[in-house]
Length: 145
Image (cartoon, rainbow, N blue to C red; front, side, top):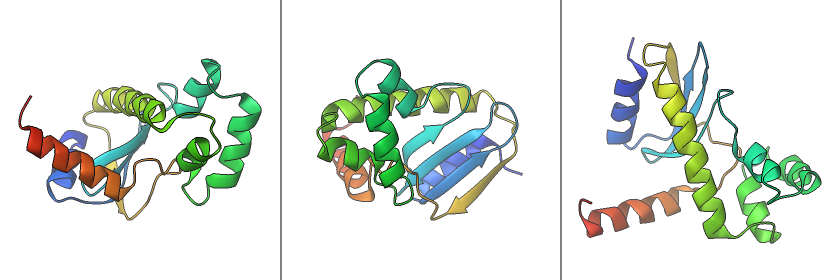
């Protein structure tokens, strides 16, 4: 059985798309598109919805409505931006923070059982494959930091 860390590296290097499910405590999911993390969630830290509502950035009713409309089709992030509830760049920064926090928590459970489900997409749907490729291309052009 692969460890979370080694499997995550392998999935990144092979440009895999899908969901890496982490069982045990705290448990959670890391979603990837083209080998890049597009979202991560764990009960150990607040997700993007909790963060947006708790900060007052998005009203609870608006969040609930957008989730009800877009969750099944993975369009929650796009709906938030389209409806003017939050700007694209601000949402990107907030999602990135949520990803970092969740991934950090999950990596503490380095020996937790993991499984990968190819093709499974996140419900937020904010970082699509095209955007991930553009970010990766810019990073390569910019060189190491």
